[in-house]
Structures are given as C-alpha cells and as structure tokens.
Image 1 (cartoon, rainbow, N blue to C red):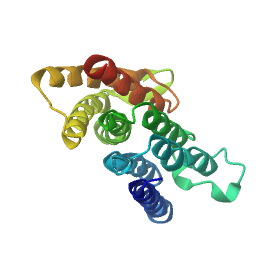
Image 2: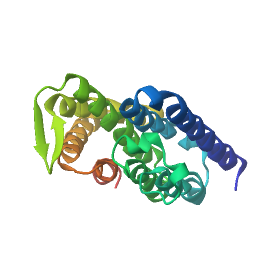
Image 3: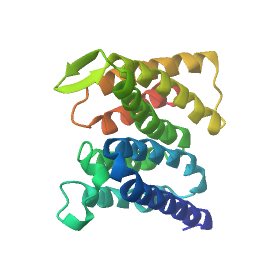
Image 4: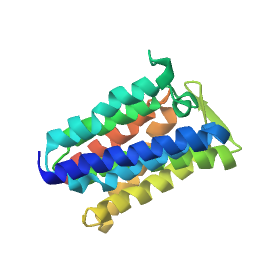
Length: 222
C-alpha cells in the first residue's frame, strides 16, 4: 500500500464517519427524511477524493468494499438492532448498500479512468438526490411506474443536475468538454433520467451510475 493510498483510505473513512455521525445524531432527530437525502447527496463528494489512490484493489476493496457490510448493518435488515440507523430507516432500506456496491464495482472496473467513477458517483448522489429533494418540494404533478411515485419536476431536475455534474466531473479530472462531448453528456443525462424514472425500490442507486459509466465508456473512451 502506497502512502497516498493510506491517505485516501483515511480521508474516505473520516469523511463518511463525520457525515454519518452528523446525520444520525443531529439531523435525523428533526428531519428524518431530509437527513437521508443529505447523506445520499453529500456522500457523493467521495468523487473528489479518488485522485489520492494509486492502487485499484485498495480503492475498491479497502476504501469502498467494507461499506457494503457496514451499510447493511445500518439498514433495517441488520441482525444487530443496536446498529440500525435512523437515516437508513427513513428511505429505501438497502439504498445505502446499493450505493456502496456501486462504488466498489466502479472503482475496480474503471480505476484507470477516475472520471468515469466520479461521473457514476455524482449522478447517483447529487443527480438523483437533488431530483428527489426538488421533486418533493415543487413537484405537484406525479407519475407512477412500478408503484414508485415520482414527479415531472423531479425528473427535469434529475436531467439538469446530472448533466451539470457530469460536466463538473470531467472538468475536475481535466478532461476536455468539447461540443461533441457535451452532446453525449446531454444524451447520458437523458437516459439516466429515464432509467431513474422507471427503476423501482431504490435500485436506481445501481442502475443510474452503471448506465452513466457504461455509456461514457462506450461512446467516449472505448
């Protein structure tokens, strides 16, 4: 393990620990639903810690992988009742577990293209999270697919936020955003929005980031 890997793992663990403590002990007491969204969105900042890592296995299996078990133990399905978190109980029970699975898979598969990992994480966290927040507050006209109720305003927010975050991810990782790339990003944001709209039971934490990552890989890298 390189020194930078140690710094990266420490940065991830400390950041997530502080985030969980704040949401569980402070925010969730008054705003349980909002605290879930806050945690969902803010975890996405891990996308900006990725440059610290030098080893694929360390990022995937030491920094990301352990959170699969940890978030499951925090979920309503945890066999350890004392570890069940209020934040996880406020939304889809396995949402954070799917989140951890996504990061682990993306970290291993696209380690040599950190921008792809970041794009998947940001689309999942900020894109989907902000869409939900905006939809809940302003979305009066609803639609339902597979028994999940969503709003048109939320879907529009998903499209706009995802596009902007994909651009931010590329700029952060010093990738060129040409007119051609921007058109592809608009298409990716559109597909991600459709996928989020039709994916039930919190599984959009899996479907959205994988769709975004694979589209970018096939259209602009592969």
